[in-house]
Length: 251
Image (cartoon, rainbow, N blue to C red; front, side, top):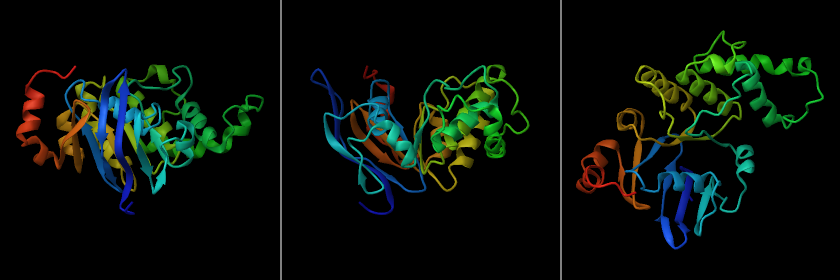
């Protein structure tokens, strides 16, 4: 595995009752890039993403991360290895403040998430780092705001801050624009561009305008297989890709 490749799959396959949702996928994600997985409905994007983040185990095939075979690794172990993922639905604690949400993520990295007997004053040393992370995602000065009071776009930004609290090398984003209003898309796009500096990002995304703006490499899936790969312009001009998107849904 080349040092330039941070994540790689070999023959990755996942079958459900004999149906191959992902079939023989050989994927390479290059270090320091923003890489998108796209495809029509039912193409296998989410299944592939869940295999990469270990929420599903493959029927066969291998997954390599930074030269290490992680095929059988539990998802909780990946955080310590520098992999972090987001989810389609914003996953924050609504009735905690922003700083408390980020502080919990910082505690997880320190291994103190479940130390409920400690007073809140014992966590104050994490506040400055939490404030830095909130500032980095455009939420400066909002530390004491309850998450429930945020717009959906800002909840996504908060989720990004909690993800960054794990200090990831590889950031996996599952449809970051899902549910985001048109007015917040440009802001969230720039946020992803900012947090990608010095990191690698792999994202599943339906918004092709966002993909065309952000991504260095695009992999197109259809019926669980790789249909095309390259720059956005290259795959957008591929007749098979055009047919896959304009033709009938694969679901």
